Length: 113
Length: 120
Image (tube, each protein chain N blue to C red):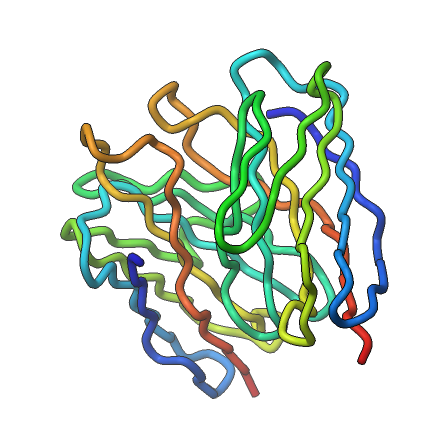
């Protein structure tokens, strides 16, 4: 699985958009980009995933560059409850034989009042 | 959404004893479950992949005789920490992936709330 690089920490003001970058320059053509987050002392929570196109759901938006070498997770109106560690993971889909999610160090996002 | 539970949520045991942690998928069947360990201020480290009805696959450096995994049904996997020592104190997290079907895209993986193990 391709490796990802994320900034170790970020701060964002409550109510503003939080933009979390992720570099995955070695991503292969059929690997997906997944985002999970982990609030302190809880299990990780799925946020969103994408292959090529930008994606949006009720939690966030995912913007993937045209060359797919980087992506940005956008939380449009951050709240204090969005304070967590955010993990960007690149992996094949399970249908293509992928088994495991391997977590890097992630970005510790702090939302400030 | 799909729910994965873990039991117990917290456990304190004495050095040398064994501890069993259960991971259950409550509203779906999971052919594959995963066990992770997380030390304070660190990321999740995958320990093993558990497949229903077969032996678990352990990651490099994880002792299979110390961390016994049993995936006896499509909704339950257990992790037993044998002869626990203080260095085994950690946050143990399981995750479950729904069995593939036409309705699932192979992307879903759901995590339990974690079990905090303290060995004294």
